[in-house]
Picture 1 (tube, rainbow, N blue to C red):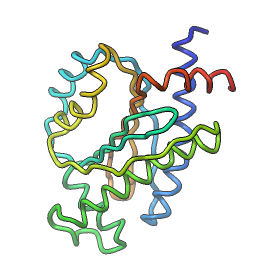
Picture 2 (picture 1 turned 135 degrees about the horizontal axis):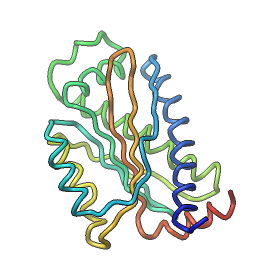
Picture 3 (picture 1 turned 30 degrees about the horizontal axis):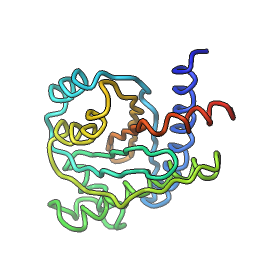
Length: 201
């Protein structure tokens, strides 16, 4: 097995464990089933990736940027359509869906909290399953077009290299027909940690 395939396997394992944990926590919080599934782990050319996102994602979304800092730094992005962020706000606050009419401080806090839940699940997997020190930084909540948010997300990686490895997932709150996107981007410093995880598998 090539080194890249081994690292891909390690990333899929981390993502899978993280997704299971975050699904459980989020489902308990909103008192409704939340199903999260991995869409892909792939290496992408940055210039091609941003061009594709611009063409596909011209819709308004609300998202959370989070840096996962520690021994294996990652960048994390979660976003949901602006309309669905209002539904998630009502679910988080345990009130009737439809109560929230516009994006406000409550909506911002709800998206921030969901970002925290998902990012914490990833760092918990590193800590409990692989004894690697990790923690999420405070989320930065953004409201913009999906393509703009995605380009900001990969900007720092673009300064260092031409290709990036991305974990892309989708999660759904089935009863409310909500679909959200989540991306995990390993930074260059994470490679030796990923190699260590591969060696322990």
